[in-house]
Image (cartoon, rainbow, N blue to C red; front, side):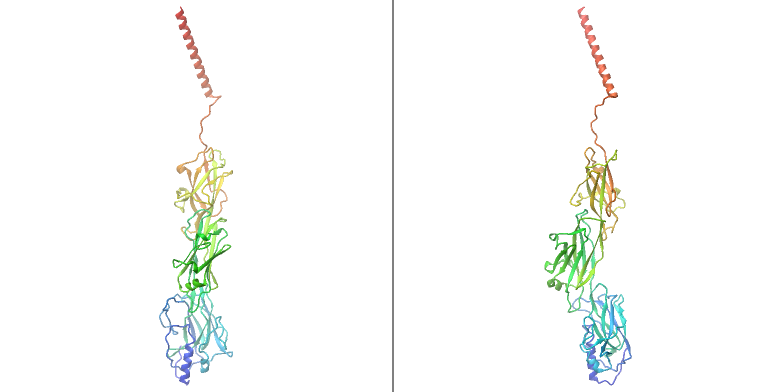
Amino acid sequence: MRQNGTGGTPKRALAALAAAALALLGTVAAATPALAAPALGGIDPDASGSIIVHKHEHQTGSDPVSQNPDGSGTAIPTPGIGGVEFTAFPLLKDGQPVDLSDPAAWDGLDGLQAGADCTAPAGYTLGTALPAVTTAGDGSATIPVDVGVYVVCETAAPDAVVDRAAPFIVTVPFPFEGQWLTDVHVYPKNGVTSVVKTISAQQGLGLGSVVEFPVTVTIPALAAGRSFSSFDIADQLDPRLTPVPAGSGAGVGVKSITVDGTPVAPANFSVSASGQTVTVAFTPTPGLATLSTLAGKQVVVTFQATVTSIGTGVIENTAFDSVNGKRYTTNTVRSNWGDLVVEKVDATRDATLAGARFEVYAAAAPYAADCASATPTGAALQVSGESTFTTGSDGRVTVPGLFVSDSENDTKNAAQRCYVLKEITAPAGYVTPTGAAALFPVAVTTGQTAGVDITVENVQQRVPELPLTGSSGALLLSVAGGALLIAAAGTGILVSRRRTARSE
């Protein structure tokens, strides 16, 4: 609805009123060219109108797009922000709504600004709040109003909003290009951020390996004249994780810090660790000053920690960032680990055997549906600094921690992973298998094993046969001995007879 006409108000006074009204709406279009004084008429104090809010992210770059209070102009290129609440308050003078039909009332509005904490300017008070409105997905919301002067405040916003819009004052109607606008479009801006955590594809597979957690934060755009007072990114590590020493990266528990893929110079940040919390804090100079020029780009901090125990097997982690004192928490990521319990037994007597030595290898197809045909790949794994595992007096040995899966890579949160166990030394007196016979595929599941994951049998060594007595073997020896005696006796008789014949 628009109000037009020619009234009895002096032209000079009306021009001054229009200029004062235009000064009220700096949030409408900062780059709007100077406007000619409108041809004003009488204002209907009983007219109704609206304040139409368009909530978008701050624009970046040196040539931002402007829109006009009548809703015309180039479309704003930055995304609209839904879920932002705005509340309008009538501006009161001496306890009464400002009377826009009074030229003196307009004179007092020139350069008027609301307080940063949604308070009235000096000499004014706020009336009862109108019903709050919330922006839709495109960032728009409409506040129905009567003729008057209003302070509009952003009273709630989603967590992603870093830089809330400053409170502003708007008149209804509003003079624009020779017309009175009763439906006034306003364009308060916000700086928004996002923070996301993930896990790098796992390299080391045994307990004692390092897990890497990249955390990505979008640098918000701030309103002109505003700056970052703080910009921290932190990871509160699970107690089963130990931050990697500073010498292995950008600082204790931190592998690297980049902005838009480029490493950040050390002068821009500091790294500290307190208990399980590792924090990267950008320095006031040059860190925060530099970030304010990089709106929309992404800071990636890669935290790193050593897995020192598995407990239940599921290691969960979240990170957070704090921008200008407001904290934003990431999604939760999981790294899943399990142990491997091996039992060594005698193949014939089912007795457990101490002293068998094993190695563990990654499987070439770790997430096969059936681990029975798994084949080894790579070198023997290191688990807690050990590469061989020996059965104890109960015939068992536990490989204390092997990687199973995580929530971000490959088969997400897979319940098991294939490994290959290799026997390298059998207990004394038993045969050490060789070749394929020494390899035992096994599935490792998340968590600690209640019983035994795999049982490996050994057979006894073959040894030389002992001489036997008291059996058919002894009888054969006796018979053979008797035959020799008979043969010897026969030979003696034959010799004796020959000798007798010669003597005759």
